[in-house]
Length: 275
Ligand code: BTN
Image 1 (cartoon, rainbow, N blue to C red):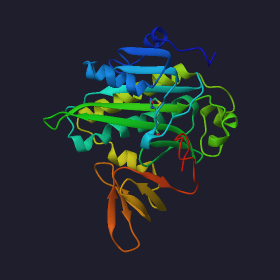
Image 2 (cartoon, rainbow, N blue to C red):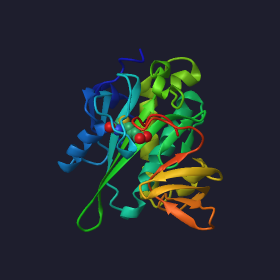
Image 3 (cartoon, rainbow, N blue to C red):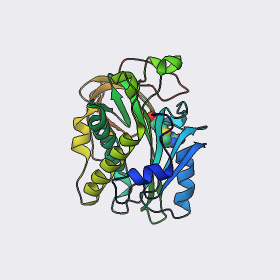
Image 4 (cartoon, protein in one colour):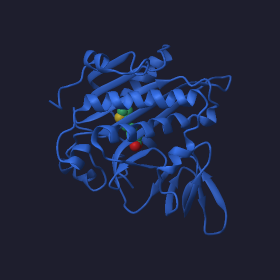
């Protein structure tokens, strides 16, 4: 019942939203929902368009990593936003809205309260439950043309079958000890995305709520960023979503993109696991 429950018709009929998921494009198998939605965005697809798949052959994570998910085990989808009301350096606010919406939906459906981990992960019991990949197109006039937020949520993944990830990733079914139906989780998540995005459009910043849930604020960490590797104290985040890291030499630097290491190391090739 949990494995074969999704189709464009079933999702559309169950949606409680006005514009998120309208339209919904569903695939049993695709290369990457992110890549497909990018093509649709370039062709003028409307805000709220959802591309969702049971299986991705080339699922992508952050920092050019793969996203691994057995067929029908997960929620794998991308949503198109056109937040013309935001400055390009506030595009990360759309990611924050989606991360908070994942946490809302997981709580609503399972009673479990996930944490968020900078920059884009959703954790449960210190393991990675979901990852978010945000891609942005900026116009020649320096305006946001589109933001595509891709989400991979481990619903019924049996990580004991994926030894390279079992130490660092977790699924909802593992956490609650029984399979979780994907459709109610998806419709709840999309409703929370819509509600939170409309608040954003009305001028409500998600930063303080996002930061309140955020690991590793207040901890000593190592951050691997494109500009280098830095160890220090994770002080806070700024309005753009950048991590403010206090270094041993007294400087505080701001890092917009990177991976935070809390305790464990993970594979360089796959990004499903927490670091
Ligand atoms: C990360 O944690 O690295 C982000 C992972 C994002 C994975 C999702 S699955 C749906 C969408 N399509 C992709 O190819 N990637 C995102």
